[in-house]
Image 1 (cartoon, rainbow, N blue to C red):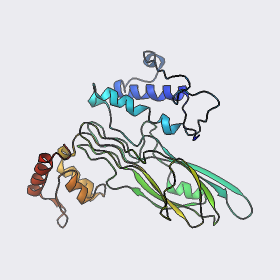
Image 2 (image 1 turned 90 degrees about the horizontal axis):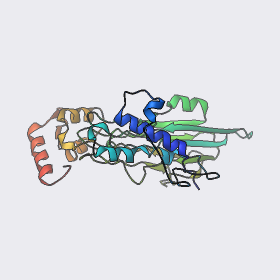
Image 3 (image 1 turned 90 degrees about the vertical axis):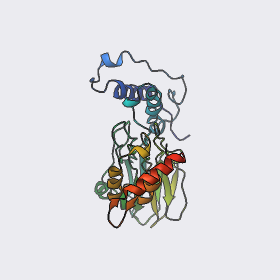
Image 4 (image 1 turned 120 degrees about the vertical axis):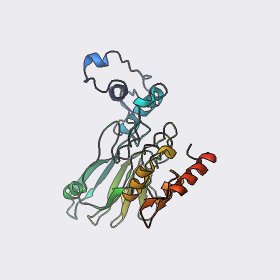
Length: 300
């Protein structure tokens, strides 16, 4: 119904790509590298569909092929995988009349939430895995389409807490400025089930779609956006890697200074107490807070 079925070549491509990233990232893509890998899915299933089923939004399922593979490999090779990320790109389409003469416009753009944290580094913000796509600059969107981007910024606290933090999602506020009703087609995911952390890492924040009247359109739907009505897109964050209580307090302080996490998240998730007036770490209070969180089983 919503075109989320996946053809076998798409399933095969993301399966082999994921395995190569985890097992042999330095080997160039070639027939010899792929020959040992066999990929199958039940005929007629959502990962191996047949005509005439709809496939226009196949990325919503296809981009999630990678993470179950990484979760399985992570049981044997935890140092070779990443935590859950936002995975599926958020594809936004606006269409309608450009003016009262009947001229039609249609514009599609991609956006990405946060990537899952890595075994030795934080996840990339507003960057998707496995597609690797980041997003379209606001200036490009506003130049080629009658769309105004009132806001675009990284979402504080959206990355899953961990020794290595999940990548942050982003938030956008958009408006079609034709003065006429327009159609907004949503192809989004991770609005109910957040990206999970790995080996003690915590989940990222889920995404959300919110109209300025306070309603929440279905993340896979088409609806009418009225004149002067805005829509807020909150893209999900990636999961964390290892316990957040293992994160270097100096990195937590850096994240607070850069606006990536709030002082409250630093305290509650990472056990780091920051003197906001001095902009420094209260080391004694931090040691006590981390001991308290460990004793009470939080973030362990």
